[in-house]
Figure 1 (cartoon, rainbow, N blue to C red):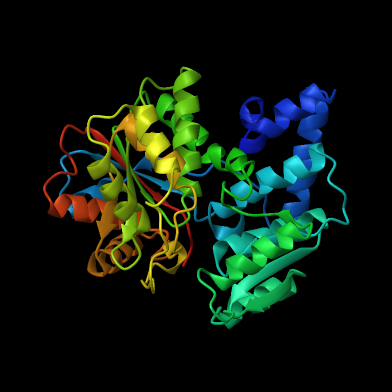
Figure 2 (cartoon, rainbow, N blue to C red):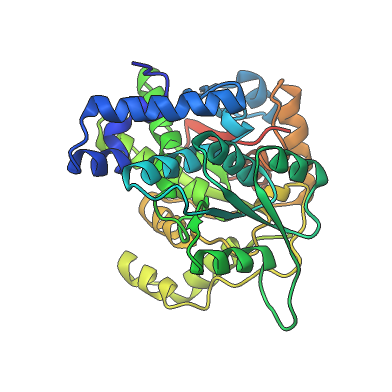
Length: 380
């Protein structure tokens, strides 16, 4: 049994595992399913899923002048070169367990790591994939998607239309019967299942080091990475691997910060209200609005809406922390610092570090913290 595969090692925490057991599948049969799908992924990608490193980076901490330990979770060597494939492999398990017909097309709106990860996983499991992309999508990525057998749909904005046209075409496809093979929990709630493996790994790796984590800075576009990672770390606490869940500092670029804006307005309107009352107010709408003309070197976090923002708000209320808006200068600097340590991370993948730089500049990052973490999640 390959216990270095997180989908096998932590299977008892997976929703797909619980569903399979309830349907009469044995533990061994589920392990065989994971291994079969992982072997198929390896044939496409060159390797399957494995637990990725999470350890102290004395070099990076010294460059930042930190008096506290700085740990880095490096997911750039994962399938699809980012964390996105975790979400999509988790969805693939649900497709198999729920016996969704092979003739049901999969659909995603993305032009970056999520699309590539979807292409790898869909190709591996032998399912058709429709990818809805903006008209300006990178030609190299489109070529790679085509090589994986994906059907590519450039999406132009229609007259009087608001919002991301690629996402709108994706929603139309889902409405017509496609399966949402998405990394956003609002479109595919089960996508958070595979994403939690990141948090489970972090929790167990902390336990193995007899360590606790005080703060974590996580880059946020649509929000699924932060949502699922925090849920996974909370599970790790509940499993007894660690004693505490760290405060969350979700990081966005200054030229695309819908979460920070919504949080600021929500906090101003809900002073003195309880946790549940604040969430009820957030759900009532009006706070999360599309960001006009997002742009940044961190192109992978330019979602004009933070789709999974409610779960992030819940984590902020439960565990502490606040959104951080990183300047473009700090995003570029963070990428340079990360690359100087040998990490093959992209500006998007190191944007959490940019948030830490911003917080350090404000003199607040290490207040009361013995150990801080950032996630490197996309390869350059």
